[in-house]
Length: 265
Image (tube, rainbow, N blue to C red; front, side, top):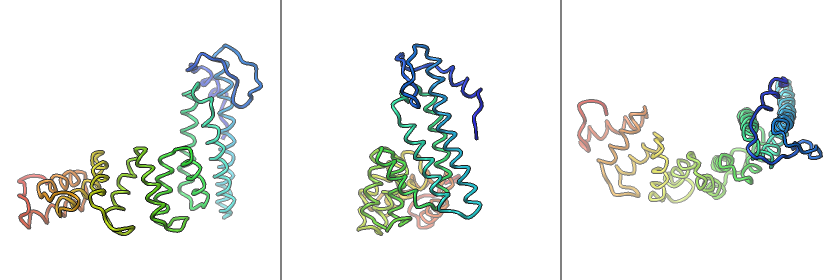
């Protein structure tokens, strides 16, 4: 889908973040100019060219999908995303933040479309992005290994990638690590470590993490047993509509583990 000249003109009006004149990343041989509007115009043309090429690949991929040519569709999608990613990571982006933001948005949109497929190339893209320090991709690699999706199930690899994502403050990795350490499926449970990860997620108001914390406090696993703390965390989860937390609260009230309030949970 082509972008109109008006889009280019609008991008040309953006203010250059740096006062240094540089050539377009599409054509380093261009003569440098001091006029920032011209420099923005050049880079916006370059960005639109790359995005248009990606759009063409995606549109062709969608047609291939409709014809049942899934392998070629996957190849098209992956190629387009790799091209976009190579461009968006260029040295140019520090000088053109508004253009960079737009390219990132297009990349994210196309990536979301790719995620809906079962293409094996997704794993290659995850590895590529992980190599660039992308926490989202590290999380996706971790969950792929944990569930054996597209790769042989491997708890060691899953733990490694989830840990890397969590170290980069990716919230979903906190919950995933908490579950790995608490469910005893991958290795012997370590409720103390599980408690640490659930706590980080619960602090971000994740209802499932709050529910899990309630369970640890109720049973005294990884933390000192405390019906009061259990009820507090279950209530927080229940207030967000967590059905499991509501059920646990009713159990505790019936068992006289906690006093049932007159109103609410």
